[in-house]
Length: 200
Image (cartoon, rainbow, N blue to C red; front, top):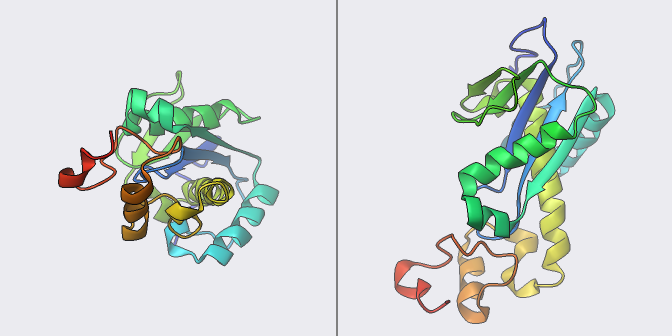
């Protein structure tokens, strides 16, 4: 059972990211502020929902939220600042875009870089504990999936329409055969160590 809020007296924004472990594509993050009376049985950690249910939940969140935003950090930036910092930056960018300034942030995970002077709480597996984080996980995941499906049409051999950039066997086989493209994260281990040297 998801909790509605960490503190019922504050305007809380839930934040989560998607695509941190991928070999290709941006890392996406979302921030969501839900009404105090919000509740819906479909809302859950995006990883626990089918693709169809995730998109249904996205519509519910977007219609009900007081404010929501989605942002990304591209592969070049990821390579420059590393994926952990890129995840923080994506969350910051999503918070930047909120039409309502939150008074508190609920962050999925155990680490975060402070956003201005807004207090925050890091919650491990928070997308399965708080509705606003679950809502953010759904938006981040679906918008990233949309992006990967879009660029998959230009790079069909990587099979992104199925793996969304995660390191599946088919994805790594395509990297070995075709090499990496502009969407790949060059700082990541794209292939096993014995084959990585063949790329660059």
